[in-house]
Figure 1 (cartoon, one colour):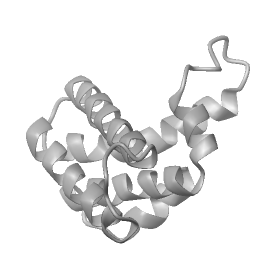
Figure 2 (cartoon, helix red, strand yellow; figure 1 turned 135 degrees about the vertical axis):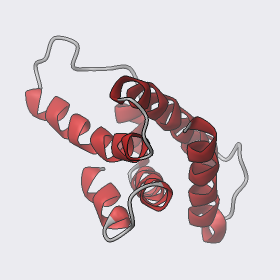
Figure 3 (tube, rainbow, N blue to C red; figure 1 turned 90 degrees about the horizontal axis):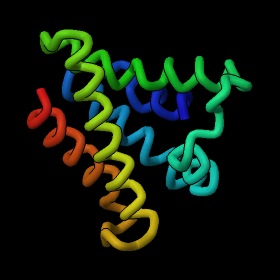
Length: 125
């Protein structure tokens, strides 16, 4: 997921454009790897810290979503909460699309997710 998010976000200006591109990267990863995404989005499997590499990778990926909120001037703790809300909404939208409950054509899905990310960012900052 980290690689896909980075690929989509590469070269994007900080802020809304970066966050929308990162959100599309998360969606594309989920679309292309639905079983892995279901595992990652499900119950936390690393409760006892048995997989420190997993925690480090997740933290690095989440930082890409956190930075745009900090860059618009939010205090780090408030940015952390807003990031969690953003990712929760993005995860929900992604799951609804993948499960066919939210009908978005494959051709329009990337733009739909990007627009959703932009709206979320505007509402949360």
